[in-house]
Image (cartoon, rainbow, N blue to C red; front, side, top):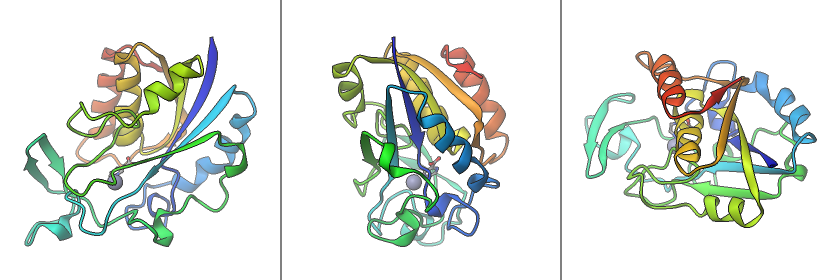
Amino acid sequence: MARALIVIDMQVDFCPGGALAVAGGDEIVGPINALMGDYDAVVLTQDWHPADHASFAATHPGADPFSLTDMPYGPQVLWPTHCVIGTQGAEFHPGLDLNRADLVIRKGFRAGIDSYSAFFENDRQTPTGLAGYLRDRGLSDLFFVGLAHDFCVAWSAVDAARLGFCATVIEDATRAIDLDGSRDRARAEMAAAGVRLE
Ligand code: VGL
Ligand code: ZN
C-alpha cells in the first residue's frame, strides 16, 4: 500500500504569534520535515479564507470569538479572523519544507461555508477533490500530522477512514486547540471511526 503524509494547516496563523495560535504549534515543524522523506507522497493543506468568511466572529456583529453559532449545515465555532487569502498569516510556517510537497490543497475559500476536513467542507458533502487525487495515485495508507489535532486533523482523519482509506494520526506531530475538551472528544471520535492513533 502506497503511503502519503498529509500535513494539515502548518500556517503562520496557527503557530505562536498568529491569529489563531495553537500552543506548541511551531514545535512540530522540525519533526514533520523529518517525516517527509519516509513517504511515497507528501500533501499539504492550506486554510484559505476570504476576509468576510462566515466562520469569523467578526463577520457576525456582537459575536465573540470561540462562541458557537448555527449555520445551515450545522453548529459552527466562530473563530478569530485567520488565514485570510493573500495575507502573511495564511502562509506556511517559514520552517516547513515546501519543496517536498507533491500537492497543496486549499480549503475554506467559499465565504459561506467552513472546511475543517481536507476531504469535505463542513456540510460533510462538498468534496475538495483530495480523495480523487489520492485514489488516482494509488495512495491508500494515509498518515496525518499538523494543526489542529482536534479540528482539521481529526475531521480529515475521520473522513479518510469513512472514505475507505487506512488512516493514522501521528499524535506527536500534532498540537490541539483544546476548546472545552475538544481534544478528548476528537480522540474518541477518531477511535470510533477506525482511525489509528500512533
Ligand atoms: C482550523 C479552526 C479554523 C484548523 C482551521 O486548522 O484546525 N481550526 N480553521
Ligand atoms: Zn479556518
